[in-house]
Image 1 (cartoon, rainbow, N blue to C red):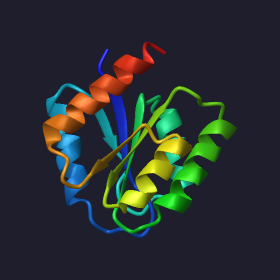
Image 2: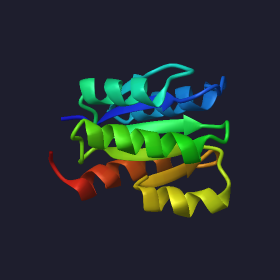
Image 3: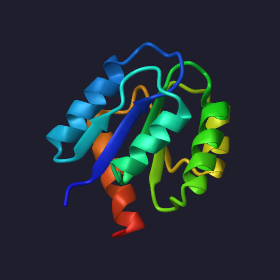
Length: 133
């Protein structure tokens, strides 16, 4: 069964070229990918991820709102009783936020210069480590 991924742009960030390249790369690698589109709220993203029963929720951010967006996403997942969904972050964020995001529960932070094949390998590894649902 292919890995299911929801890629989301949260907030006012209007740049989606990178996330579209990632979506295409993951599809080419055999993953089932849903892209939520631009300007989504944490509530919309979590609802879509739960409805689509994804293995991985990937949130792409360039707007510097990661320290407010991710706590909301984790609270909403918990509220919906979802404990086995892998959450990854992508885009641009300062180094000092990376450790805090990982402590919060973000499984991996894939910055804008991460090679596409490394993203595929990372997501495969995260799902393999989590095991079957």
